[in-house]
Amino acid sequence: QSALTQPASVSGSPGQSITISCSGTSSDVGGHNYVSWYQQHPGQAPKLLIYGVFNRPSEISDRFSGSKSANTASLTISGLQAEDEADYFCSSFTTSSTLVFGSGTKVTVL
Amino acid sequence: QVQLQESGPGLVKPSQTLSLTCAVSGGSIASGASYWTWIRQSPGKGLEWIAYIYYIGSTYYNPSLKSRVTISFDTNYQFSLRLTSVTAADTAVYYCARGDSDFDVAFDVWGPGTAVTVSS
Image (cartoon, rainbow over all chains, first blue to last red; front, side, top):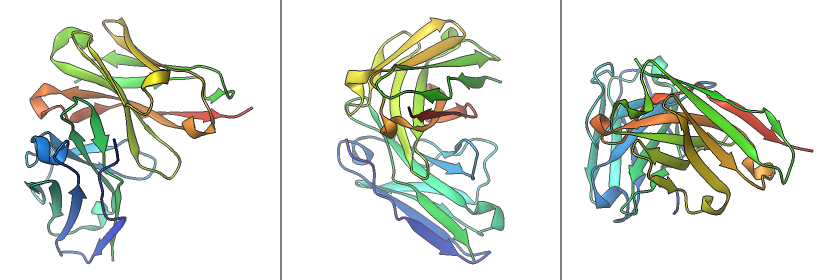
């Protein structure tokens, strides 16, 4: 199974909105709604931001939102803040009951 | 609140077997419909799913690692990973994580990670 495709980097100014894409196939992203997103700061373990395509754990800011269209999922960060500078990974369950991560996107706050 | 803590040897010689354990505290493995998982991250690289074991014992493996990997429960509070015939490509930070059915199998709890270097 191949890693899901994400842009290597995305940048934005404070207050702006940015969107990170996560492209897969009908066997993973397009196959069901078990798509999640994680934020990872340097030296730390990843943190769950979004699950089930668009759901947020209670402690996650509503500045983070998720969506999906066909084989591509997206994470949007609204009102970009300095603390949002981190690496972001998508993940999807597959139709074979395995799991695959995205290649990762480095977000830079200008 | 469930917490996870990985333990490992730190340094492993090429061709040897890597054994890692994940201690579960604040809850037990059998306390819910969870997927107990190993994930690794090579230096400067992305996340790679290795394997998970469902709370009832069924196992699933990354096809690219399946021939070398075994995941298992040791107790109701610990699960393990064995990776045979390691090479330098297996050098990584290894994380254990819980995939919870309440979160559509997403990983809501992670351990801090344990670094493993494969070198002679």
